[in-house]
Image 1 (tube, helix red, strand yellow):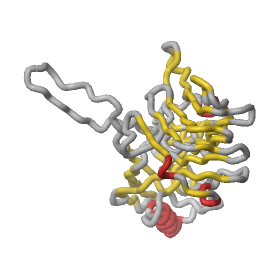
Image 2: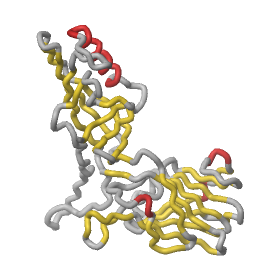
Image 3: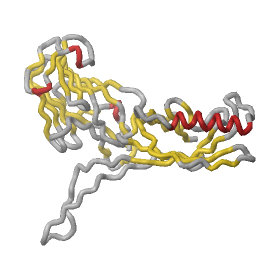
Image 4: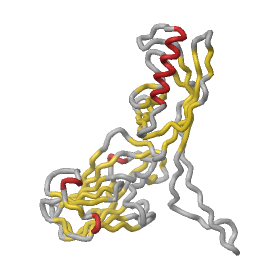
Length: 289
């Protein structure tokens, strides 16, 4: 059965303090941020590709009971205590709440905010209450819980980033690591043609780290993914392709051979003056609509 978990607390409470209403089970699909461009003398609108997705919202309908955390009936006083506990869970405002959508072994994670909570409908005699919380996903995409690391070849064309297979949304915050020697290395997302390139040399034994989400780059001399330990080289990184004026490489899954169940992220890597020690690694989490 599918359910939601907020900050580690199940909304189908194991002791029955509160439960999600049946039907409040599936996260919504995001819509595109629409743009219409009409040209005189041409029917319809101009097709605009590469539109971003809008933030999504959905409702969580909850029934609150008078059960104690150990499963006993605590009457109306326990109902009020459960309402206060749920209110504290839904009332976080100083940070994003970690929301998990769980369906068996499938887990998707997103940072969310609670936009509104309805006035509770309280049945005093039955000692239960009903309310609905409106949840917003500002970042649109749901993610895996943990990062995965993939090792590719440098140079290498149309390489499948195997840990990202199955994604349905773009991965916008990947970490790239190029191991030298490599001159003017670049990585291209095959689906969109977007490229991130470094205008410089990565010496043998050193690594170039590129944080696509934070638009930062650094060279390091140790086996690390921490940009803060290296020398900043952000100014030597150039991005081209869709949306490159304000963002770096977006790894985008593409459907293979007309099969919607077969989705893969492909990248091409280029560099000159490489050896057998040269390599490309990508650390990222899968993304889902």
